[in-house]
Length: 215
Image 1: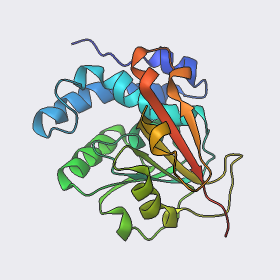
Image 2: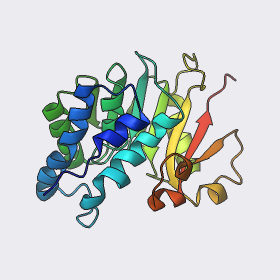
Image 3: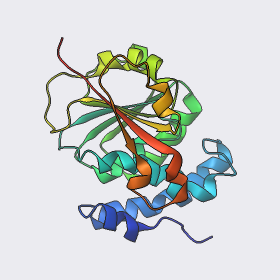
């Protein structure tokens, strides 16, 4: 089966992606197809849409923030490694901690990161509430409602900023994000991912950003 990962499009979107990174992106489809046959981390109906629905969707975070070297990022409820794995490929000098409560999913993440030789990824079976480290950003893809996610992840975010974008939460959601955030008591911003990528899938996708402030 032809590899559907469009590395030329990734290079067009992110000019700083080098040849090694593009090769790693190209390896994602055969790796996930192989592992998905053993452990179902992506819907079998959706595996053919890996590039758009999972890789590009993850990389939408990089459209609003280019992470500096040394940045620490926590991916909560990473599942099969999204958004953490694509972001870790794009930012090889950024440290990623991918966590999930389900051990078999972390098994797949570790296998993928080892095959890609991603030295900047640590994957662990652990709930967010038990993580003790501090991170510049917490990322995730719709693991729970925003109120609950904010409560369990805000303590994991360091206050000292090294980016023009203040440290905080970067959360991938559907088009229900606007309604869900109506009664949210803290500052936030919603990005329409459809403005980043020309694909109908993204017309209903949003990226919610919640910065952390000193009390």
